[in-house]
Length: 125
Image 1 (tube, rainbow, N blue to C red):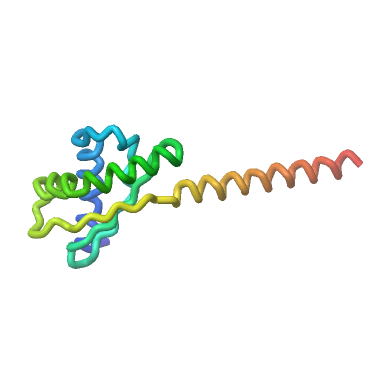
Image 2: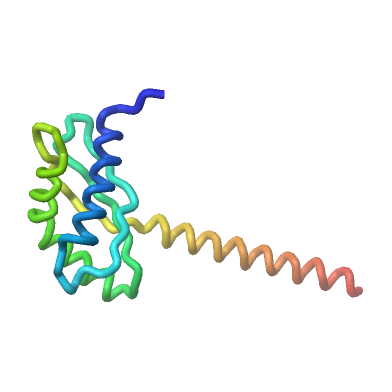
């Protein structure tokens, strides 16, 4: 299956931004960041970078501020690593899908435990 160029560039951006953040940023506000996905427009001009942070809400907010301040630096570093004519404008967005997935999983586990308890009660009668 042939992938569109924007998808391939997005995968490269995930790899390079992960390296840039883990090795190149010295901002103490930026915590443990994981780049989860990148959506690149078809003309490769804009990229929406989704990330998660391990930590509290306060650490997440501080990391968001740190990443926002570091975006021009990250873009310059990315430009030196990519071999495309124009480096995409980067927009960082906190990815809530992992937290949402954890919430759904906990709800399903709770329902499963309740159904086991209910079925266990009827067997004792």
